[in-house]
Image (cartoon, rainbow, N blue to C red):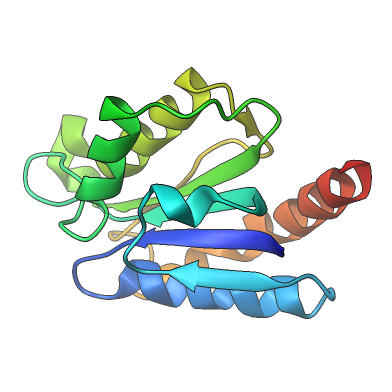
Length: 154
């Protein structure tokens, strides 16, 4: 069983960079991590905690690689009560209402299915961080603490 699975939605690789940075920090604590860039419902099996890292594309849509997973969750809902999760949303605040909309969709879907948010959604603004992984430093410290506490309970 993997302690953490990171499901990535990415167009240009920024979300992958963020996922890799989080994975490195989590592995340094001794927990096991799997990064999945082609998530599906099977990605949820046997994993206690899910981190969703996604950019937003178009007019507030999810990237092509994670859209089928989101659709599967809507069409074949899974009971996720007791499952811990968090979301990191990448976006560009100059896009107004669609800013980080992809991550917001995933966050709402997981909450609707009963999953427990271990951290508030983190938004990383492309106007503030040219390298998106630079936007996680403060969040990462709190995430590692929340993940450790959740893992100890389970």
